[in-house]
Image (tube, rainbow, N blue to C red; front, side, top):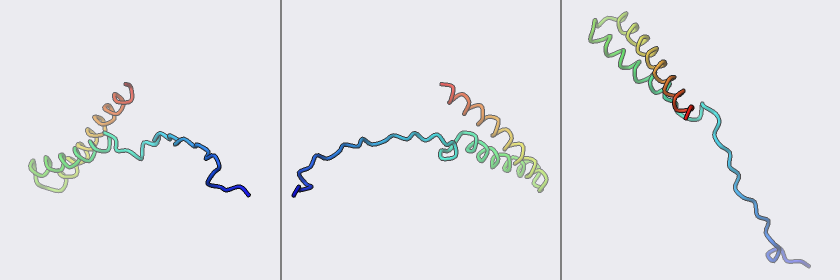
Length: 79
């Protein structure tokens, strides 16, 4: 009867699966939206101090953060 520990082991190399999903990694777009949105809240608070200026500051900061982050992501994938 054959003994299994004397058999030749089959070699299976580790398979490499690159991460292609953008949702699994943080992108510059999300980081800049969050950072500049909070920064816009602060600017709105110190500029006028009412709720309307807070909301407008957060929206403007988030839009600027999206535009900056999107351009940075585009430049990073180009190289």
